[in-house]
Image (tube, rainbow, N blue to C red; front, side, top):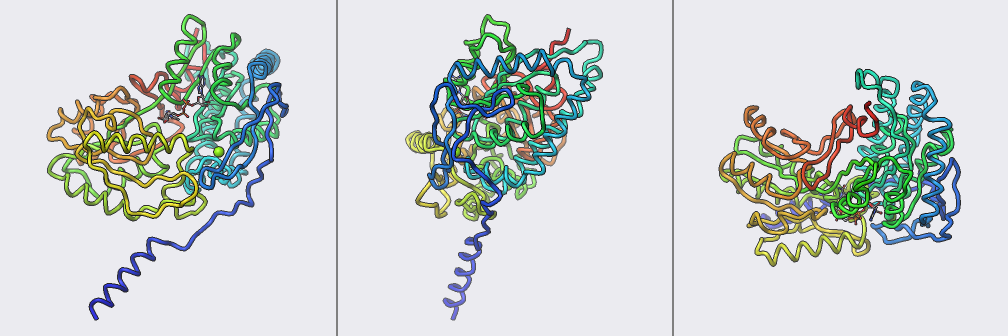
Length: 492
Ligand code: NAI
Ligand code: MG
């Protein structure tokens, strides 16, 4: 009798983990078979005559073909941006410029469903994430910066703010539409024109944004969106008529860009990697903290530069935290990103999955103990089980280097000073999190942690009004908020 009851309970538990599928429909999205370059207000064939495929990383199926821009294409886009700057954008009254940016924001909202579906198909992130975070936050950035357009003189009193000219912008694959919004919105609000290149794995939503910009009737050449891989990015960086480079991506490419523009008049903001510490004190609300840790590293596959990839737990609550984390890990749903139940979608590319798997091996070799959730993963596509490493040493590579996947290292500490030292002991400094009941502890840590953003009793919160950016090898310059306007202006 008792056995039957236990079996029934077990069955119930298993079926609770396997929710009935709740698939988002693909019908909201139209994806053309081929995309050209958006230059001077029109889609144009690349002079290179070359195209590359973009795939759905959850199924490995080809979605579309994307133009591969060469240096001649980049030159054409930069010339279009320069002409648009001189002819229209610089001369236009600021309030008129603002109207265009508001229009883009509203059109993103109108096409939110389509953009979310395409983001998920092209990049592998859960539809819940694209629908509830990426797309609305992208629209919010345009709304927010549209509001600043005619108030720049108040933002920088006595400074006579003037646009720099043409901005070259290069973005990564983890937040494709949102990064495009982060880059384009402040550039337009400050009167600059743009040449933007999305990442080669995830160009589709930027190309949809190009369609929106065309429909919004922006003067031709104000925004140019060109596609391609690293060499296209390098052609933007090295073009002599670009006034500013805004880059988000790996620290390695950030360093290449820094070297390339040294000795030129080009300005730059670089938003690079991270290895954020998430710190739990023994007086923290533990369940809330555990949920914050899960949200900080496992949702969105750990493809977040500010992901909380290193957990520091005060010794007295270590066992409780690890037990609760492991329990929670077992309930995470890994799989089809188009399913609204999914917590962890597909790893963005085969290369990135290889990188993550390489670090899983390194961690085990270094003597750390690996624990993976006992969850099913699809046989096709690029997927990774959420993974925890305990018994980690501060010098281990898994605790020092950016893995950019659903992989968490856990270490312990006893005192405030010890955890501050450990948290600061990486080459990065983008973000950090502190979980404690005491305001004084929060203030002590926020002043001593060398990170651009420190969250207290929460994690991964974003708002267009808050500045974001790094210390050390996480880059320099700030994006977002009032701070995000200055890098696009000459403040005489
Ligand atoms: P990446 O830095 O190579 O790519 C980012 C962007 O830079 C892409 O648009 C790419 O086409 C472009 N790019 C590449 N080489 C360039 C060059 N020489 N000049 C100008 N532009 C260039 O990043 P990747 O290879 O996709 O990812 C590698 C690692 O970087 C990841 O494992 C992760 O650790 C980190 N990463 C960090 C991101 C962040 O948000 N901070 C985002 C993406 C990756
Ligand atoms: Mg893709």
